[in-house]
Image (cartoon, rainbow, N blue to C red; front, side, top):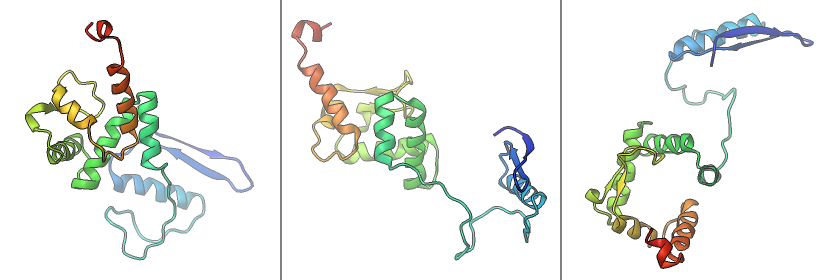
Length: 173
């Protein structure tokens, strides 16, 4: 978010601000100032942390279901979304929203599915890194699973089936 503020002339003037702050208290302070400038009474000061139990929510955003997000990601080959989904996996499972936390979760899951860690080397969520490696045996084990419930499983299996149905001469290229 970039720094810029202004007034929208309506029946009651509305102040809008667009800014980038990495400090949550700084962002909250700017937000409180904008509310006060618009004539909205605000008690207390800006601070960071978990809201006390029973605090009323003043705003929220409902995301699309993860299955829809992943379907769109796979359909459009959206690498940014792949990275963000990986970080979200890390945040939910390990309470750390980072690439490494997400990769740790994926590695643990693959290992639990019987895919040896030495057969898969992952560096990112998008698959763009030249450092990503997986053996054919690891991919085969993954594609043979009957219990994959992720929306992408059908897409991956369909792609694998297309590869398998190619004429031998083309498949050997």
